[in-house]
Amino acid sequence: MAAPFRKQRSDFMAKTTVLTGITTTGTPHLGNYVGAIKPAIASSHASDVDSYYFLADYHALIKCHDPDVIQKSTLEIAATWLALGLDTTRSVFYRQSDIPEITELTWLLTCHTAKGLMNRAHAYKAAVQENVDAGEDPDFALAMGLFSYPILMAADILMFNAQQVPVGRDQVQHLEMTRDIAQRFNHHFGELFVLPEAVVDDNVAVLPGQDGRKMSKSYNNTIPIFLPEKKLRKSIMRIVTNSLEPGEPKDPDDSTLFAVYAAFANPEQRAGMREAYAGGIGWGDAKQKTFELINTELAPARERYQELMERPEDIEEVLVAGASKARAYATPFLQRVRHAIGIRPLD
Ligand code: TRP
Image 1: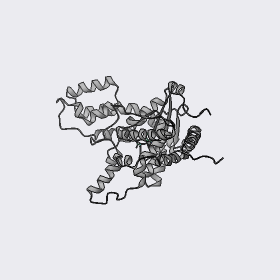
Image 2: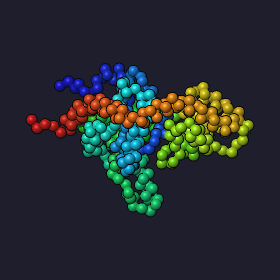
Image 3: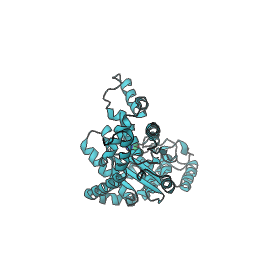
Image 4: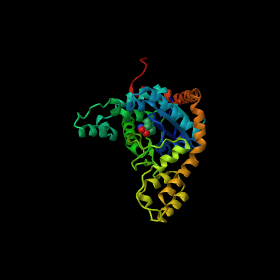
């Protein structure tokens, strides 16, 4: 039988499938914005891509056990993407938990994923190491969800045969694992899955937070995307700098503030700011310029965001529509996978 739901070579030549997910814990911050949301939205407008963007609420359950936080964060993230201009007519925008095929595929993959592969996951290893360092049992307070996290992520990606997955550098290992899992599955059951590639933008992938470490909720150093203007300015003023005075040359490559600026700047602006650092720009000035650059980029979307947050029912509607588009692909494709591994009708 012809395979109507399997991507054909001609489809590949015509369009690239791009997919990424955002875990719904916490309020989206500038690190999420430059690392994932911005490139994703840009590609949602390109006509040569099929894009899939989703709210990874099942991933959120691993780290967050507060139901209200999960719900609020799902709303905030959806509103953020829509406010920033995600094109939901061209792209498929959905909530992971609305696609039961993803959890089903997760189990099918789980049965063919080496435990040893999961043992090597950075996130899991770090959690074990923390326990060991604290003199606890290595598995103290660790849920299976954390251990199996990369398999759920593989299912997210393989479900739609994504070719490119824009992610932060910390997720590259998960993409390698996804390829491993897909390869093993393909080897046993035929070429079902496309092997995806991580797409990491070297200029902006890891945005530092106010303290110079990677901007991350777990370091408590984040700057939310849609802070009111005054608060945004204050947050940027709090970015760490050294004690060099105005007039003294500064090293942009050793500056958190410059890294933040660079993440929002075009190449010319970046080069200009490099010169300003070499020429001894004062930190106060450099911060003000950084604030202005970021604020100019975000101000129009900030207003749309406020409007959207007041209409959660509209957002819900967008997500339901997105889920039905996603399932139009996922349902028949999962059927093929089930068949391939022997989950079949008996006649
Ligand atoms: N694990 C990703 C993160 O923490 C989120 C995510 C879940 C994801 N599933 C995905 C990203 C699939 C890309 C593709 O950032």
